[in-house]
Length: 292
Image 1 (cartoon, helix red, strand yellow):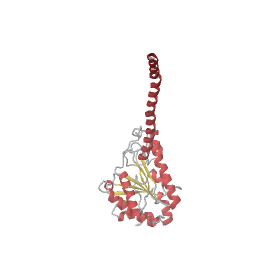
Image 2: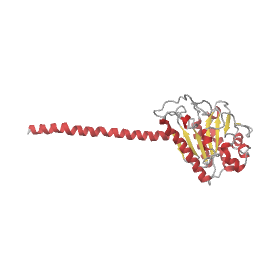
Image 3: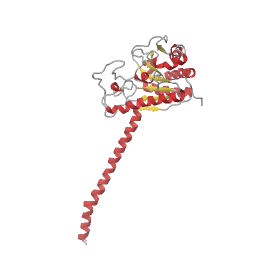
């Protein structure tokens, strides 16, 4: 009887226990794989913040982020052209925060949210304001780039389908003049629709966007508004891709903010002033939804 019990115990130890251990160990491995998938999905959403809107207005901010793309080294730009249309890795400090304040201020002014796409990734890893061959150097950054531009295209199409026209504000920072905001429209090319519908004064007159911003006390360039835009600030890949000179685009303006407009102390006030000008512009030139 004792021998039979011993044999049974030995059989259990040799066969049953290893099987149970193996099953126990496999569960955490599966959970880890699931968690990795969840982290990837969440991190992509965090790296490019996308929001649907209820207005014919789209806010874009590609260069203000601080996040690192997992498994991606900083870009080096070896062999690439440098300068305004080429490789550059400097961050536009304060523009992500300013864009979020602008979105909030527009909603306060007009009672509805604009569409928006904001990159929270540091520009040294990815530059959404460049074509893909310059924007990133590691294939692991491509999904982030694609999310930015797929969302921009989707938003523009939604705005056109519902409102037939719209306004894209692409928010940037510049270090040339602290007290100035530069306009970038490829000298009127990216706002072709509003010029065709309402005449050049809608782009270069007192009731143009930059005319309305000057009324808010801003120092703007060009001023007079029909002057040539500053070389280097005439508008980058985003406004050239999604401007109204493109069939699927809307009127697009790149705003290059000097440092004084991007400080923590000034951002809320600047956002409110921009929202006021946008609300005036919208009433003049955009087909707006009925007020709630």
